[in-house]
Image 1 (cartoon, rainbow, N blue to C red):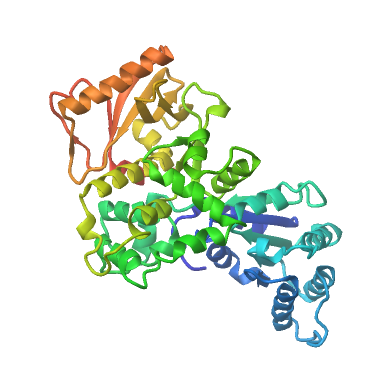
Image 2: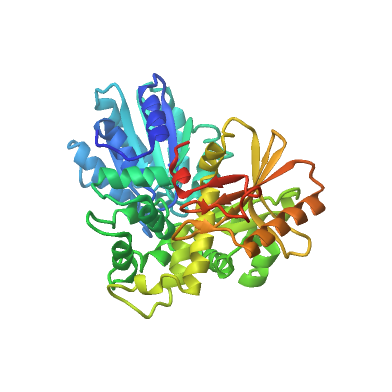
Length: 474
């Protein structure tokens, strides 16, 4: 089996399922380009006896023809002039083929399952019959289904209310690489970059393996970003609309919400999204927000001490944020395009927000750095009633402490100025006054290269976390 960077937990689960003595039905989902197909093929390569990938924007006849073409390659006895007329016939043919195979474990892999389920095709009904009537009583069958449309995978399959209810025996939501997994990915590909350069790449591509593949040995982060995002054939230029249209019906509405969230470097309430996007505050918006959250593009959180209806939303997809800030309306192409943008006001605002998002995605590493991995905590944000003071990350701990975190992205060790301290003290004071919390407050700095202690930080900053701490594993 080929070496896979990261994915240790997922590989462990996949191998456990493979060794199971029972029939298994595995559903794996995650956003486009996150590496679902690669992972399944690498772990199950020697056991896959049938594999079909759904066709994008194809009708039922075309999907059935695709199925039959794959099956004919596996079973030479099939009559090429007699393709299945519907999915029930198709699964009968698949069953007959599987019964001929002598194997301790037979892996059947349907990739991009949502694309196969075309309107009025009855594909899900046929899949249900195949599993319930035959596959579920075959101890050596492992049915693997995969899809990028997380909402479809959850609503139509995993949470199915009909004949497939509770039939999925295992499910995996494949998330983007963490910073540590990204570092391991580069190391396995002989790409030697320090952590600051890896962080810069992560800020524009997230932990998406397909994007990270665009980085080649011998490239600096600046060179890689120039090539991927600012050369005329760069992989990140045309990806944006393809990304959303491949996942959602009527994707224009999802893109509108994403772009509303990208306009301001902060989380937005539902009402603020309505104002910025122009989408009415109803069931359609609820569905859009849920689908974007399930697909990993946005994060929904609850401000400290607030109720569910007060939830706020943040754009957490690094690529989308970068695209909208720097690629969408770009006028400058070619070598050095990215370097020319470094340290201008737009770059500083984007980099600070992007680094905050990365910190929010690595709270497990922050907790480990604080020495509270075993302590029950709740992470949240907070904004005062007048909306003048905002705390993007606070960690409410069972040991009667709250870490109020200030995130600073800097190219050098950060120095807390008098103004910085006054602003931080205002956040702490306003938080204590409004929440009436009796817990001890620990002002906490999260920086890239640490902070230089001075009269303003000494006796005030209780914890200091650096970029290196974010590269820790769970």
